[in-house]
Image 1 (cartoon, rainbow, N blue to C red):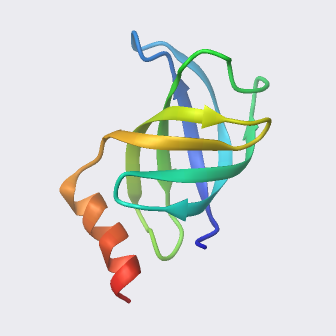
Image 2 (tube, rainbow, N blue to C red; image 1 turned 60 degrees about the vertical axis):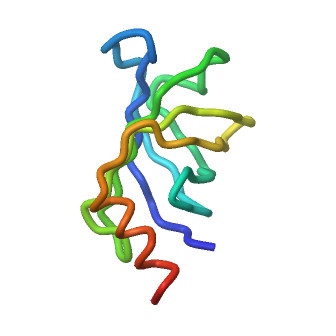
Length: 100
């Protein structure tokens, strides 16, 4: 279990339109995706349709970490996401978590 705060920007996957932004906690993370809880968005709840999250973490042990991810399942204030764009250096930070 991880439990770090992340900022979230919510985008429509079909274009550059940003729906919302807010924050959440990353509870679990892997090289392929993450599970977020305590999602709080400025303008309401997650839309029903598929959305992209841009995640940004600046808290130990993931300082200056970011990834673009697709919401693959969500509940009221939680979501499972799959990365669609993540730099190799960001993946390496996740690998380092498991090796430390």
